[in-house]
Amino acid sequence: MDIKNIHSAVRSNPVVAYDENGKATDEKIVRTAGKPYQIKMETVRGTIAADGRALAYIRVKAVDKDGNLCPHADGLVQFEVKGAGTFKALANGDPTNLEAFHKPQMHLFNGQLTLIVQAAEEAGKIQVQAQSKGLKKDVLLVNAVAAP
Image: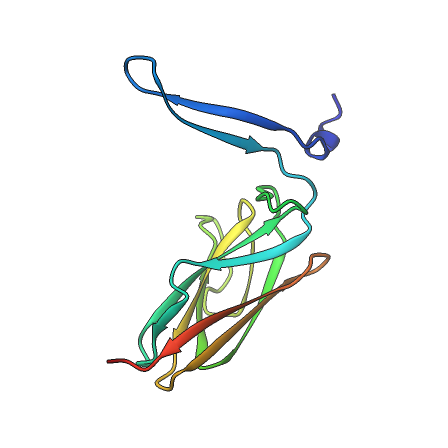
């Protein structure tokens, strides 16, 4: 088998979880990723307080054309934050990584990293752009709303 081409064969495999009695309790389809195609960002909290302290944690990942995570992607991702917030930090989970976490660029580790943005004290939209050489860029909006 040619190890260089192993990632080009896109396959899906069912994974089943069983309880102690052998009864299926959950099932999921796991798909082998194709070539990295784009950077994708997502956040659980799309709205944060515009209080100058609130943080939004954004998951950044390299995905193939079908949206599957590409766990072997390790490209440099560069960020630009505009509007009602500022760039705060990055982390990729690699314990051997020596890149500065306070600069708006970092290499992916296992295909992903985490970006942190901080709200300003004025309400508005925080626009985050991520780009990596050879991949489609992504733009994410986080709403910063007036604090109660």
